[in-house]
Image 1 (cartoon, rainbow, N blue to C red):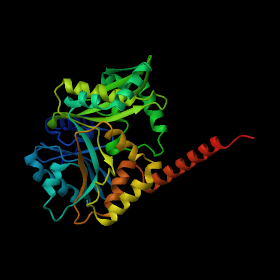
Image 2 (cartoon, one colour):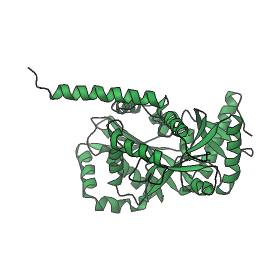
Image 3 (spheres, rainbow, N blue to C red):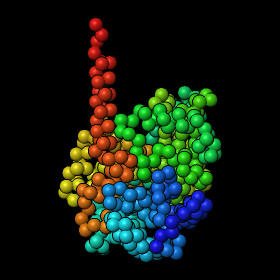
Length: 363
């Protein structure tokens, strides 16, 4: 059973209910992201649970796991999969964490594969991390010596401030891949913002970078969802934003912070099916010219997380399929994955030509 809003007022009520459920039960690090633009909402029959999802290529792809009480997972996942079956769709839980994995571990009708890992910190230990990392202290000093200062901004003000939009535009323009969506939606300030934390890095009066963090209420923590910076922002600006956020969360007594999924991290996929393991190895080896998986992993690793938690794709198929993987790629890219790859290749080739031109001596 699903409640479908038929008017604007109904849609607002559903949005409010989704937020209330996230603030009550949000355990998956991505829970608050179901309130981002482009995510549909399904509610349980008792309206005590919500699933954020998108439809791609015959799959309902969930944004993490159902948001509900832990002892309701069995009932909620059963209802949601019945809803998907009524639409003649399969289900894939994207970026699920260990609680949902444990629930499906004994199921012969669900396949579980590793997508990557996410770093986790206890922010109360952050001062010790900084004290023990000379390179990190150096980066913080570099930014401060360039006059960068960090201040908290009300999320609603940031959403209306064109400077933040300009930073995001320039940051996305510097990427070789088209903007990603779904669980890496860049337009987070266009979604629900009331409960988020926004930090702005300013150099003089100009915003040169910003950080957005979302609550993970059931884990007494925060998810650092986005760090966007101008390409010309001083070195160390991102680290200074993260340092400020960690210290703020420590002062609040929070015990959990993550920066989200690092896809293809290290050797997390060694237990995946052979075909998928091969594809992931090839992607890790050759995809860095389009998306800097290794650089992202190194950036987070240098901040010495307390641990790395595995993140999973869970499909209601006996064997995880190429079709499910293609659907996940479509959700993240927002377009056909093949088209996204083609765009990335063309942008990469254009950049190689520009680099070659710059290196070629002029007559």
